[in-house]
Each structure stands twice: as C-alpha cells, then as structure tokens.
Length: 153
Image 1 (cartoon, rainbow, N blue to C red):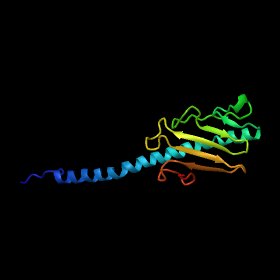
Image 2: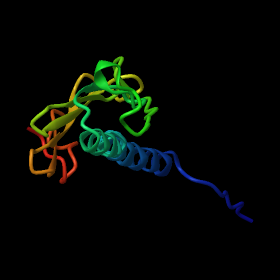
Image 3: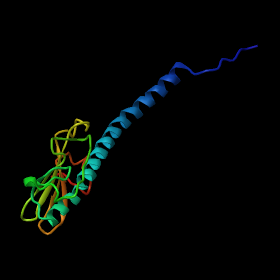
Image 4: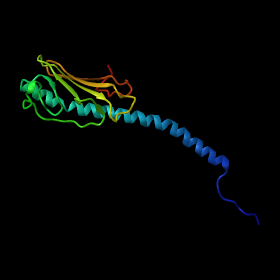
C-alpha cells in the first residue's frame, strides 16, 4: 500500500509568498497616498470652519490678525464669535493664521506640521476671501494630494 502525503510543495509556497509581496508592493504606496490625501482634506475642513469667524468679525467691524480662539485685533476680543480648532496636523502659534483686511478681503492659512505626513509637512492650505464675499481654496501640496476643490497653486 502506498502512503499518501498531504501538504504543499516548496514551489507552491514560494509562489504564494511572491504573489503576496507583489500585492504589498502595490498596496502600501497607494495606502500612504490615501492617508496624505485624507490629511489634506481634514485640514481643509478644519481651516474652512474658521470662515465663520472671519464673517462674524467682518460683520462686527473687526479687522487685523484674529486668533483661532476668537480674539480680535487691537484688544477687541469680544467682537468675534469664539471658534477653535485643535488639529494635530497643523503647526504654528496661530493655528490657523487668520488675517482680515479693512477692504473685506481675508485669508486663513494653515501650515502642515505636527503629526502630518512628512511629505506634506511645511506646505500650506489657504482659504482666501474676496471683497465680494466669495471664498477660494488653494494649497502648496503636490497636485496628486490636493483635493479637486482645493487645487495646487
């Protein structure tokens, strides 16, 4: 009587390991790009929340540099609504930096840092308000990581 052996040959195991290695080589960079894009989108949303502060300050006649905690320029801290952001993806003392001009234009600038991916660290995401009240978004991150609604440049 012949005895039957059960199991896999070394060649079969090596083929499976090779297939897994090829899939990992494709999946890991795609996942990292996904994480970077999600970080940019998160900062875009959190900085965009500060548009409420800008509009409220403009309605109350406050201009200048506004702190994220809602304080106004020139000691006028009660003129703006208090809105804060606590993103670990942004860096700087004024996170994000909000500047309101007397002409009605404004900018909200967020600098990537902190726990942001090193590929985008040091880049900016900027919301800009025109005198007519329209908002546009732009970023300095690579175009492949920038959301469609916030293009590079």
